Amino acid sequence: MQEEIKSAPLVLLVNLGTPERLTVKAVRNYLSEFLSDRRIIDLPRGLWYLILHGIILRIRPKKSLRLYQKIWREDGSPLIYFSKKQVIALREYFDGKAENTDIDGKNLAVKNIHIDYCCRYGAPNVREKILGFVRNGGKRILIIPMYPQYSSTTTASVLDAVCRTMFDLRSVPEWRFIRDWHCHPLYISALADSYRKYEKEHGKPEKLLLSFHGIPKRYCEEGDDYREQVLATAKLLRQKLNFSEDELAVIFQSRFGWEEWLKPYAEEELVRLVNSGVRKIAVMCPGFSADCLETLEETAIRNREVFLSAGGSEYHYIPALNDDKAHIGLLADLISSELKNWEK
Image (cartoon, rainbow, N blue to C red; front, side, top):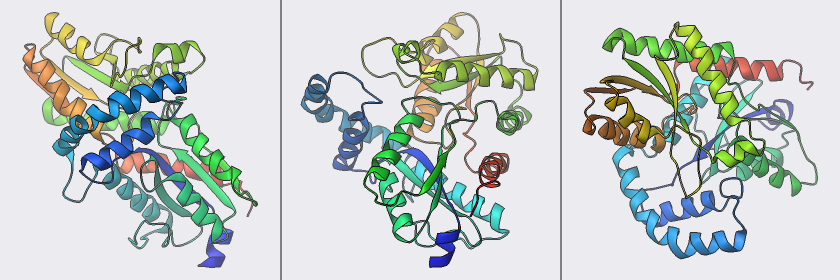
């Protein structure tokens, strides 16, 4: 095993994160780490810490806990569940029928590639995965932030965590990362196939909405190309499905704080659509590689209630790509493209 670790690269899938368990304390710890990240909230630290610790972390954990309770699985967090399934599916892809071993960094992929997952916030975290691999003799790491569209709030934050870890190492491993894949043909095809499965069962909606996580508008004005990549993904999917601009549109969800975020805001747009006569819609979340709180509670439950309460008749959420075969094929292609010329 030691020689295998030394000779083979680690492919590390990094998603956002989740509370470790359903308790107020666990949710508070998670929110504290997440909302302390300067990439997420870039207000002056003194002012923001006063707001965060004096107000938000006193109120929000109980509210967030109730939301997590709606979507929590018997075996834990949906995000962790789907992350594990993605790792297992990728191992099987590269290793034929790889052993379904545990995913704690001890038992890695079988042949010439190690595949694992971790979280930017919460556990298992970036630091422990990288340090564990390097201490066992690992020399090469491919980091995949699991966000198809780049944003400083997600992809760059993962790189911050990676660089902080590397700073503490005497012998820094060679490493690479995949910045984004918002226009990758296999990604667009996977999204299109996912929609077609829905349409085959439920028929064509009057409107297909692509709901992406929002970010402050100011971030894009300062150079973040997230909105540009979101619109590029939407355009390619629209072309792939042969939809008009009126049939497929983009909305932004999960707004937080007081400043202006990317528009249109999901809840406002859902009400506007009903008022304009739209009664049947379907919603996809192409920016989320695995189902989580934002997709399962906010999009599938809460925004459905908004649409139906406003007078809509049918609202369908199309699940994230998760461990869908086409999605695994896309991830495998990304990995293969990066590793094929990487010297041992």
